[in-house]
Length: 422
Image 1 (cartoon, rainbow, N blue to C red):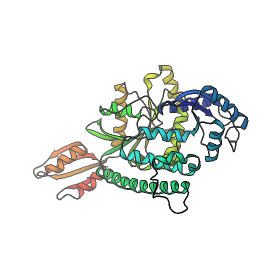
Image 2 (cartoon, rainbow, N blue to C red):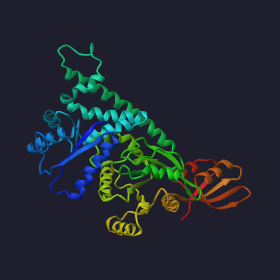
Image 3 (cartoon, rainbow, N blue to C red):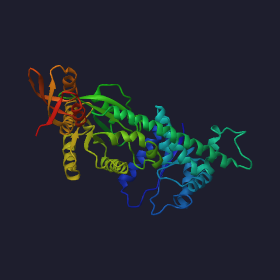
Image 4 (tube, rainbow, N blue to C red):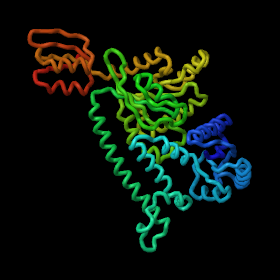
């Protein structure tokens, strides 16, 4: 287990509470990665130092603290340039990584599916490429060695060429995966799709497990699950929704990682409804809320139909929940639901909210179907909500609420007449 020394270098204007919160989050990330925190150091900065990020005097103070604590790893909460990382390693005599590298390492150990592993590897290689001069020795495990180096080619150039080739290969494979995902999404047309989005450890997987009744891996750690999971969830009145759990977001999520996971996050873009899950019991939920909003905006999803889901309300007192509701009314016009994965009544309220959104998108139609066309009648009952039925000698008239996609399919069937009801 690595003995990690944490370094925070926040802006001078950041409040002490947020400074402490950010360093605590870095500590949890280190724990998730399998490290043991043995010390912390903070220096507020107006501008990063070009050589060490922190000031030169603080860097030497850090060197003494690292030696005293017998740390073998230093983790910065800020992103370091390749030169800053090299200078710090030379001064401290131990490995130095930044927040992005730590998150990438966690993703590498947590990814389970083949797609997630490819996405993480691509992000790691793109992060590594500009840092090869400092980190080339780590690549000895993937180098082919004899026979791969051209005449006069340096080891650094060889590594760059190999990584460039591998990046191109991964991008091609992920494009193929994206095409397969698009085919899967097309096959789900006509089904109401919901995506759970939110800060890491907000309880998305716990909610999906509670709503669907299926077994999903759940752990009280940052980035406990990376692989998206989709489950069919009954939402009442004969309706069902396909709900997908997406990868959690976090403050300063590495850009390369967002880019690599874009095909997975497209599941959210294709959803009819986004459920933005927020840990209501977290002291810093408002910053988490803003972080998720920023990532959604970056993905072009900020105008998507969305409902805020304040989770883990079982951890709040009645007075705390009332104060939270007042704060939300002043903060955000979006509809909000308060839930706990352990409170069935609150889960029923969430199902009602999803169903109301679904019904609002349905077309209200009158469909006349030949009596003998049992398949079309069954389709209306299976994919829509039949509110009235009149049986005649030749036809059956059904008034129903159905998905818009189904209206087009019904209109193409022989002998079936469809008209919208005001």
